[in-house]
Image 1 (cartoon, rainbow, N blue to C red):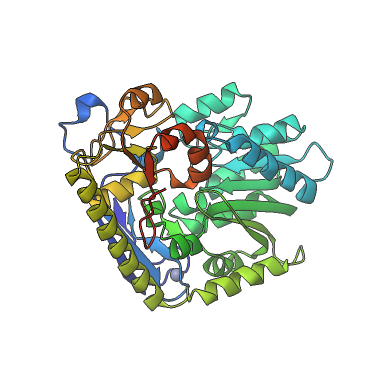
Image 2: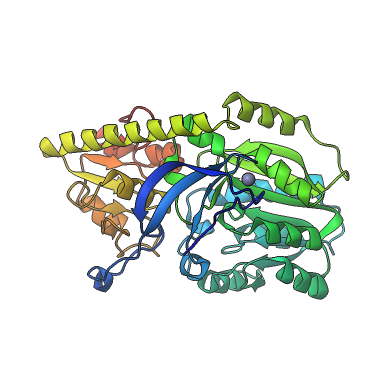
Length: 411
Ligand SMILES: [Zn+2]
C-alpha cells in the first residue's frame, strides 16, 4: 500500500479527511473455505477532499496487482447489462464514428469484452486493454483481442505503433480505479485521433449526496468523480469535456464525452451538471462533513433495525454479494450473527466467503430451500429488476431492506 500526500489530479497537498470507514479488506477479495482461518489483510478506507480542485478521493492506494490481476467482476454476468451496453455502443457509433470501418475503437478496462463486441459486430477494428488475465481469456474467446496491461502512456504509444490512432476510446468504471490520472491523460492524448472521442463512465459523486450510496467507497474506487474537478484535470492536457449525461448504472453514473480541446462544440449539458454540483455545494468542504454525519446516522439506523429483527427471531440474508456490499457490512459491523448467507447469481463468487465478515455466498438453489424473512438488498442498484424477479417471495410475506439512505426503507 502507498499513501498519496498530494491530490492525484492537481498535486495539491491541501487534502482533508472527511469520512473514515475503518480498516477494511479489499472489497473483492472473497475467500475460499480453506482461507478462513488465515489473517486477512486490511487497509484504511478513508475519503479525502481536495481543497484546491475539489476532487473527492482515497489517499491509501492498495497495490493494483492485488486488486485487479485476478478480477472477479464479469460485465456480462450482471442482469440486464447487454441492452445497456448495446445502446451505449449505438450512441457512440451514431454520434461519433464515421462509416469508415478502419476506425479503431479501444476500451480501457475492457473486462469480458461485452461492449467491444458490439463494435466488432458493426465492423469496426477493436482492441481491449485489461490487466485481469483471467477475464482477458474470456474476452479473447468472444473474439475481442485484449492487451493484458494497465493502461498508461507507454501502452498508448505501443498501441499507436501497432494499430494506429483511435477514433473512440472508452473507459467504463475504470477512471475511478486508476491512481495516476496524469499518465492516464497523457495516454489518452497520445492515442486519441485528432477528431476522436474519449468516453468515460464512472459512479457520480452527486449520487452519494442524493442517495447516500457511501458503499461505493472501496479500495478499488480511488476517486469519486464529478464534472468540475475533471474539467480542470483534462484542461491541463488540452482535452475538453464536450458532452455529459447522467445514466442509471451503479446508482447514477456520469458519462462524459471528451475530445481534444476546441475540436467540438461544448454541449450545454456540461454546464448544467456543473450547476447541479454547485447546487450541492460540492466545492465546499462543509458539505462533505455533513455527508459523513448522514452516513454515520444511516449506519446506526440500519444496525439497530437488524438487531431488532434478530431479537424477534427473524431470518435475514443478503441479496447479492457485490463489492460495495462488503464496504457496508464491514463498516456497519454486520456479520454472520445477523446474516445467514448472501444469495449471489454470479457463479464465480458462489461457494466463497465475504471478506471481513465471512458470510457464505450461496446459490439461488440453496437460498430457495433456506428462505429468510428479510433480504438485505446489497445489490440495490438492481432494485426494480430484483423486486420484479422476487414477486413470489414478497407475495408470501418476504421483505427487502434497502441498506442505504437517510431512512432505512423496508420494501
Ligand atoms: Zn486536487
